[in-house]
Image (tube, rainbow, N blue to C red; front, side, top):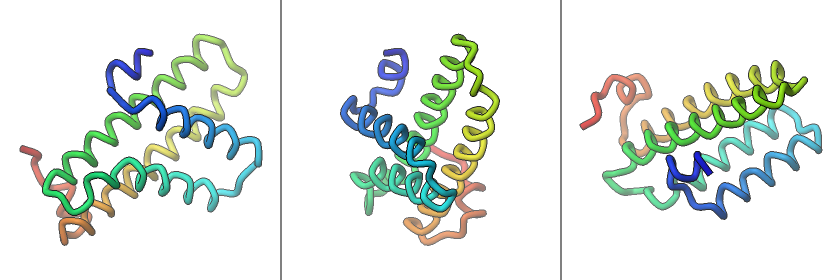
Length: 124
């Protein structure tokens, strides 16, 4: 509920992502399958903004929301003293970095710039 209030995300999308995440965990997916899942999450979230001038801003907002949701998962694992906390923390770090990489390259592609140029821009 906190994440929903802060991020104002579509509840159906959040539920779908949670279900997909759990299914991918249960299937003991490969790193390549996880990378494809992350790419699909990004594409779904940013699809409504494709071709619009607001795309870079929407991408930044997506990264903020992604980071907030993943920190809420880690917080929940911490509060429950989950034995899997260490593993999930490492996975979260990897996924956050990879998601940042995906978004950075997608914004660069959309704006016709290099990824390094995208990161050097100061948002308005």
